[in-house]
Length: 307
Image (tube, rainbow, N blue to C red; front, top):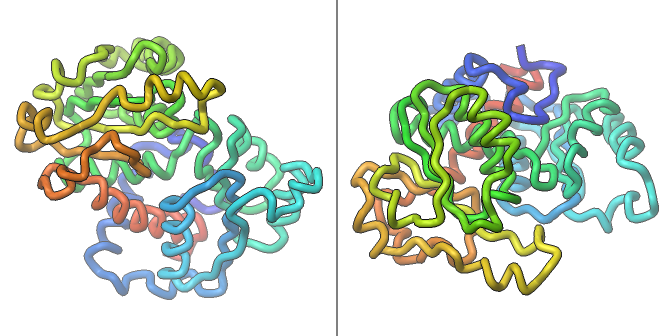
């Protein structure tokens, strides 16, 4: 079902297929020995043209735990791209060496381009401000595990909603589930793009609200998805400095939230979640990072046909 396919954006898999991955990830979590050597002899190539900690290391950890091996680079200066090689040629070459490619690139559409030239499966690990589908799988699995199901929830997105590819991917994915309400919390300059609200949510008749006040809506939320204001997406340093501290989640704000709320964050955080909240049982972002490894193990095993 998953073999010889690419994962460029969340819509590439059906809800039923994602549920199969989530069930597999849950089994891996419960039985640490399950699929332990299933990818022995398989090679994962990690091509990261943009910095990453969690995504790259979780993919490498996932492959090693499955018994496979990894190769690749963590910055473009260590690849032939620095010599002027085209992305298409890089992908053609790496396809000769690896069984699956995970790629992050700052240019939107780069993963789609790579998928057209690769002879092995390509997994998009983030393309500019566009998509980050494996983070979306991580987010959905975390919600399902901690809330029991994905439908019937009010989900708030807070922070940089304009450039946040994790927000765009998750909002698009959630629009496929029943009885979802979304609340977008941001300054005017960082509003969620119209292609999400007008092109996806309105067409699917998904109720949503846009607001600049976290305090006014936090009591209504089942899930709060915090994001950092991303310095690397700004062309003007003054704009970044002016907006970077727009929202800081602290104990005082959390006093107004539901006891059952879960706080998610794709990480890294800067100062948008106060460290004092790390011990709050509603803080779920480090659990989220662990679920990311499990769902990537499930994804690699499924795409390589070893499960």
